[in-house]
Each structure stands twice: as structure tokens, then as C-alpha cells.
Image 1 (spheres, rainbow over the protein chains, first blue to last red):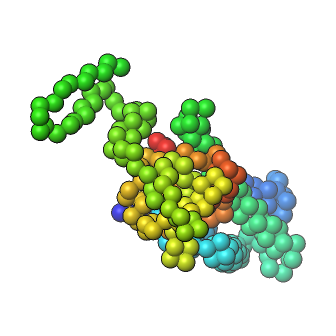
Image 2 (image 1 turned 60 degrees about the vertical axis):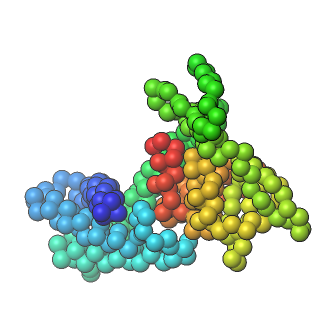
Image 3 (image 1 turned 30 degrees about the vertical axis):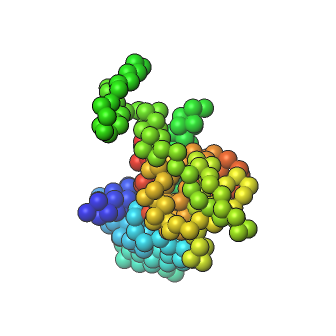
Length: 147
Length: 145
């Protein structure tokens, strides 16, 4: 049960990170490819939430908490698979929602840059979260040693 | 702290009673010391038996069905299995770090995040040991986080 709760917490945190990242790159993307004066409909908010939810679902590929240990190589393979999954979701949904025109390579390249950007942001945030945790543990270790 | 020592009646079992507001780390260490007594581990090297206190061991590692105790510079073999050591060693000081290793918390110099939710522990002697994602929760608990 606690394992399920941990997984849900991790996925929720991932969902918020991805959504924040997508909102940020969407603002940049719209500004560049559709013009800063362009108007957008309410629908795009639901579309962003849907893409975030689908991308979060893919994080089931990554191990969490007390789940079976994965080797360094296994983890790398899972990360690559997750990246491919995210590409498929974002490009597929982007095409469906007409976020870009497939006949315009520069828009497709823009989408790819956005995907890599959000992926990098989410991965960095996860690393810094682990780094902060390590700092807290180091503090406790120092206290324990009476330093 | 007030210390009271009472005589026991002949045949009465010796008993240690601790009256305190709360058990902090120093008291827990003291209790562990009493629970463990002067326990020393039998370890082997070059056909000789050595008796060393658990506190001197940095970590235990199981390699090819054998369990080794790594001290600051020396490596000894122990006849105990990891799960037996896990039970025998002071719970407050030792932590299962991976399926094949047990780590002495008091010998960790620092921790850094590693790939895949793991942490890397740099020990006081400069050695680096990985703590699996599975045991990070237990580490946090032992550190009171």
C-alpha cells in the first residue's frame, strides 16, 4: 500500500513539473511561431493538461521507491524509452491539436527543442530535489558525529 | 544525570533501568552499548582469526558467496551471512545499503545523489559505496528525516 502511495506521490510531483515545463515552453513556442500578438483558446489549457497527464503516465517505466533495483544500464535504457515515449506523445498530440504543421520543418524542430527543454527541466528538478535531500542527510550525519 | 546503583539480592538477575524524559541519540547509543555488551566480531585473514569491534568496520560486502568486512585499510572475511549480520549489528549504526552490502552509518563522510535514485556514500577512508534506491527510505528514517 505504502508503495502505491509513494508511486502516486512521485507521479503527482512529476505531473506538476511537466505541466510547469510545458506551460513555459508553450509560451516561448507560441511567441516564436505564432507571433506574440496571437490569441489562444481555452482549449489549449486542457490540451496541455492532457499531454502532461500522458507524459506522466510514461513515468511508470521508471522505477520508484522500494521497487526492484534496476542496474545503471537498465536505468539508462528505461530513460531512453521514456524519452521516445514522450516524443511520440507530444508530437502525436501536437499534430492532432494542430500545434504545428508537419510540412514546416522549422516548426517540427521547434517542437523537438521544446520536448528536449522540458525533459531537461524535469530531469534537473528531480536531480536538485535529490541533491537537497542529500544535503539534509549530510547535515544529520554531521550532527550524528557531533561536528 | 543522576546515577543510582542498587545491590541485588543473591540469585536476583542484574537489571538496568533507565528513567528519562525521552531517548535521544546519545542515550540510544548507550543502550545499544549495553545491549551489545563488548561484542566483537570474529573475522579472518590469512588463516588467522581476529576479534574486532563492529564500530571499526566501514562496511560489509558479499562477493561470490563470501562476506567481507572492510575496515579503514584492512579487509577481513567473516563467516556470517549478511542477514545474520544485519540482525546482530547495532541497528542504530548499520544500514543495509544494497542487496549485497551493509554500511556503517558512522563512517559516512558525505552523501551525493547518483543516477537512478541511488545515493553515493563517500566514507571516511575515501572509499565510495552505493546506497540503492530501495534502502534510501531506511537511511532517511535512521537519520531522523
